[in-house]
Length: 334
Ligand code: AQP
Image (cartoon, rainbow, N blue to C red):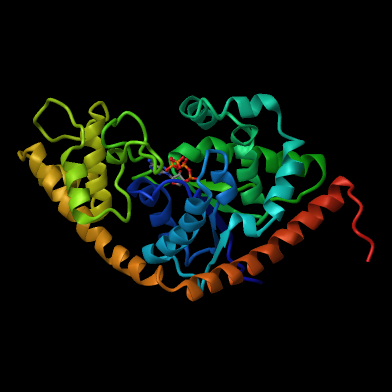
């Protein structure tokens, strides 16, 4: 009997600055799950093109995200880390999946509706078909498990539907991927507008804590976080600003909400904010110093990208050949 590990796939768009929301919803879980699975972690640059990017910044950000993945604890020797555009099979499979996806199901995607509002002068077709490319990212590697924050649940449902549809139309080709949504931290909220989720490319930098923010910036952002006019510290989702700060404290101290609420019982909001600020600075310190070391070493980073692309392309090519054969495309005669 073979003891083959299941395949885990996840990725982040190199847009904006990696923030504590991405860490809680994705990166932290990647680190915890990486031993158990055969893992592929993507930097999904093709997805990032769905909103306007400055080319030189996009290029630098890809390398910076790679260094941040490693600094957060992703082991490049045991996992595959790859830039999406280095594996053209993603875009090729996406085209095939486009042909079995209906206009109606993409029109229902809440991220498309939200991003169309936010980028009303650039509602491009890529933004609309984004979830199909994401399904391709997952299915091209035959992934079994996909750790994501709650905001990506709907997209993952589509990937599951498309895998099932393809298998039904042709024959068993793709495993149906399972989501892994963390119990705590699946939806970290914006600091200034706690009724919306924290996003790494928010125009207002005070809405998020970037993983590379300097200590004084972190402390200032948390101090200014919007709460409410009450004074008691309890966990209540109807008080989203306070609930968000308590959730962050819980994640960064590895405690439960009950323990956190117990710790702050009878204390003031200002106390919570100042302790959370310190905890956050201390938590990010080792990651930041590791990042500062790794980002200097371009030879090391480039080598990881080369090895990653080679490993990923091998897997992706196998899936794509199978798909092309099943749908009736003629293989190139040898
Ligand atoms: N606020 C959040 N709380 C928990 N998890 C989150 N994620 C994003 N925001 C939160 C998770 O982080 C990963 C990032 O994926 P992405 O960059 O592909 O897309 P996104 O969901 O659009 O992330 P952002 O931060 O909102 O990016 P921008 O502002 O660039 O669009 C995913 O696993 C996501 O669930």
